[in-house]
Image 1 (tube, rainbow, N blue to C red):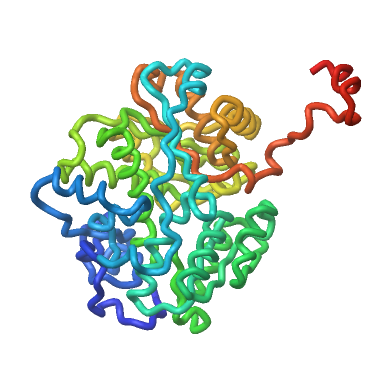
Image 2 (cartoon, rainbow, N blue to C red):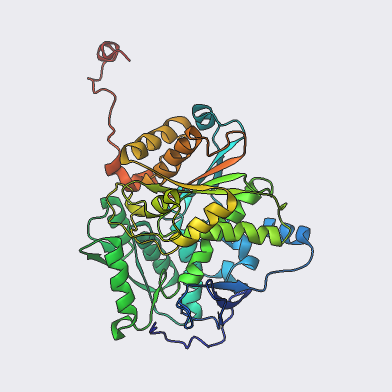
Length: 424
């Protein structure tokens, strides 16, 4: 696990309540630094905290008085206390849409909500995780931000680097959707297409980290991954705050690497431990596309091992054939009484149209996956329609226009006679 960094991993840094890095497998602890795997067992590292103690109501008031972005939760994140004053994109606090029209279509009576993260600066939830990674990159003295990406992350890194004054060089599969390629390239950093799948891109980036060419580079989802992943917790924080400081009964989350799902669960558990929400059961469901569903397959087969697959789906933002957090997703789904399900490309497109028609939200393909899986889970009796349910839309449909064929209902001459003749 060679890491080229400007600062030693043992350098004292100030990242708010972050106290150390801890191995998810064996519990070994390490000083804060640009490392991502345990030296003892090679398990993944995550941030361990000294979280605030004392009066939960005082902490709740402090959060509510904060800015309308993820920095309202700075006391719970690995960021410096003055993070809100630094140049960044200030993502987060996106809308939680009460989806009554969609609920009627699906037969949900207990309250259905869509957490719509298309409202972030680069129109996906990736702005959250990158914002946290930027602060770690600053702390460790990196000069270039990088990533392996299925599209949304590339755009988020390019934009965040431009705003924060970093250089950027991001790596993507060569055949991504055109909208995502343009959005990743427009910010002026370097964009490199790799011939192969996302898993090929990710392997290349792991090699680059150990090479002198990568010296001074912070790979947000590799050597900065423990910090980067913490950004997904803010989805859990916001959902609970927007529900009136209540846990959702059920939540449906798309799975790419699986990190978003595991960190949302971590965020919910932190809110319970801090006394900010009542401790009661919640169920977490994972959603995948059938053309890249290794976690769903393992769940249905009762396996603990997630076998890699070669992706073949229109949901390219979820097309990770060897998801790093797959085994942890299985644990969470089983522990909470949830499930992991998948849908076909045709069902994804139908779900995109359904969400647009009922709630005026144009989701990218990952959002089609979560809505499609929600419908499938309800039909199978695995989701309880009488409970409060939250479905995640993690990106904007304008990024995946190739997935949905649409156009004018009719084309007519500019006259009333032509309009009457159209039959509209």
